Length: 269
Image 1 (cartoon, rainbow, N blue to C red):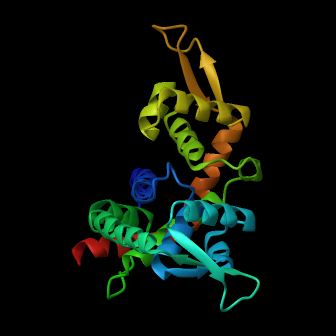
Image 2: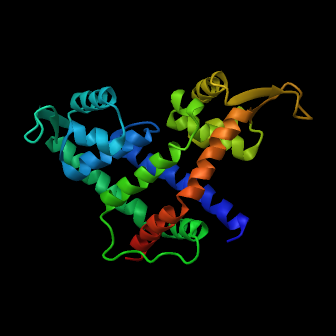
Image 3: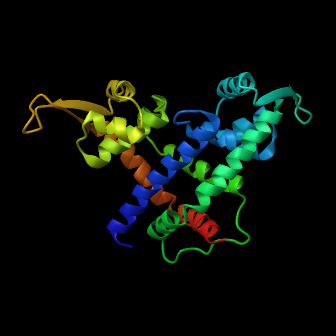
């Protein structure tokens, strides 16, 4: 497989994950939900009754993060809690009637998204495959199960980032902005606002955070016709973080190719 085809597959993989995030955001009213939170929400929607320990193990979220998520969902009327019938040290999280309706909405939205992603998923699978593209299993996967596994693959890729990035806890929108700048080389701040669908003030905050953490820098005087213009460039640390994800894609390429072959097969089902 030539480098251009593989590069295109990696670009499409990022686009697919951004679009999936928007699907979950639309259902749950979040804004660029974190990948771990997305896993927890999909598991909850699929299983309907989940103990907090199961949510933590499935998502990779810590105990405090799970508690905050559950409290937020309780405030929104989506879940209620009760002592776990299986693990006395844990709490069961139970979908309310409103939560069940929302879970059904996620399933429908997920099915629509996955079934409409055949072309992009096929290109990702072929671009990342080592040798022949693996055949998709039959019957086709349940939509929520497939969404969960796609989210889990995204979480594995994030885990390849160096300690400097993970300790700084780059949020999803920060990672997306960093990848955008590192990929394009030099980017105007307005491009970040457009790509992430946030206000200029929101983009400025994201950029400030990335600059403070040493992943981006603002550069003046490099635009020939506008010496006062500001462009963003990735620092060596930022390039290292993005390169680590690219390395992770190489390491996970076989499993990613198989996974996206399943996604592509749903569109033909």
